[in-house]
Image 1: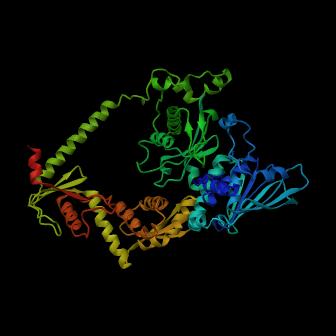
Image 2: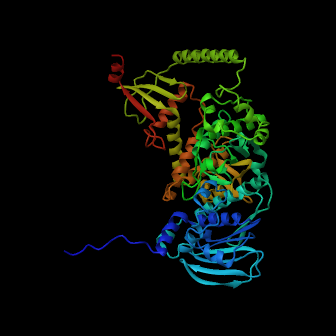
Length: 613
């Protein structure tokens, strides 16, 4: 009998490195992140990032950090090479950025890498050239203190990976995201960024407030609210935005745990909940917050990008963050002063009951959170006011008015004519408005229930679509042009779609770095809605699928239709309600709103009889 050959083999180092590269280096922005973090870990006070073709052809990082010896320079490109870990316990006290020791090895596996580095005490530096993990050259060279590393032709030896890279605009936007996070986390370090020979950022070393202004624009400076709380469990510092700084676009939300950028929907919810009643539900508050916690209480090594974390005690993190933000808003007279005390459930957590030193207690006893969270047997309650009776009276007045309005509507019902393209014939019994959000009218087989907002969206969408196809969208020039300032990432997205916005009636032009001037708007757009429309357009672009460019016009028109449909003027009268129904059934697709939701439904007579038994 012939022996079956063995089929399990060890991967070669070359293949293993390419697999590791696929986990760590997914696009040019991944290399940028790793190289910037290495520069920070090396103690650099000045870091320069040079890009060509959005990093596809060149990613170069120059720093004035500690530099490396010839041996360390060579070892840094080996897998699992690290200066951070000596034993397994070190994994649970990481405070530096890179620590897995795979970054440079992964980059060198899929790019052509050249590095010059020198330690301060060395007379000469080291020059290395590596291509697809193979060392082509290593020799002494003249070099300033620090490290200069160039990553050329990323994925040159993995054509399939290079093929899946997006446009230069998209890849550059991802790079700016990573650059922004690192620069925000280290305001004491000077950063500069060049792209295709043009300097995009020149950030001097300073404090967090000046760094936010330098990175995100002057518009945020006047809307910053400081947050500063110290507790035995968690220190919180940074800035949140005033309610008026909230936008309908994501991207201006930054959490840092021990100076490492993280994503956490759970903590984001804690923060947004603190703004309840201050911002619209679809808005996103601005924040740059730093949370300092014992590294043993948080696991940052749960995802290759190290942007997702696990906390030892999620609930306590949520409670402290929520209270700190509410306190900051109240302290600066932005929200009513509230009292936040820990519930008995949270008081029983081990994290609260851990022993502390006398020094740490004296340090935190002065803080607001210490005083509010150490009172026992209290739930999270707002301070009770004596004005509750007045509120009840106000609600009673509102109910009386609503009842009177209902009686008046019933008395003023008129006969409704047949609808233009309605599948059923209306029995002339009139129209009833249900709380201003829906209309009910009779048809031959029963009742028709119409959602007013969705009907308006369908009507406006088809109007705008006809104007788009005819190339005749009217635009109204503003007497006083508006300035629209956004982040660098959002400015890239908006620039991409200026032509489409022009076609629906906007007259927008770039006006300096990350700023645009709005000189004209669609004629039907209510005053003051310009910024909201642009915010929604940018948010939609951030989440569109790679193949969605062809459908971008439909998305723009749908966003405009949704914004224009917020006008309820005239719908409190029978004539306006009838006009809405007539226009709806003159549409080519009256049954569905632009986003696919149903506009109306029919309730048959027999179903109504069934409800009554």
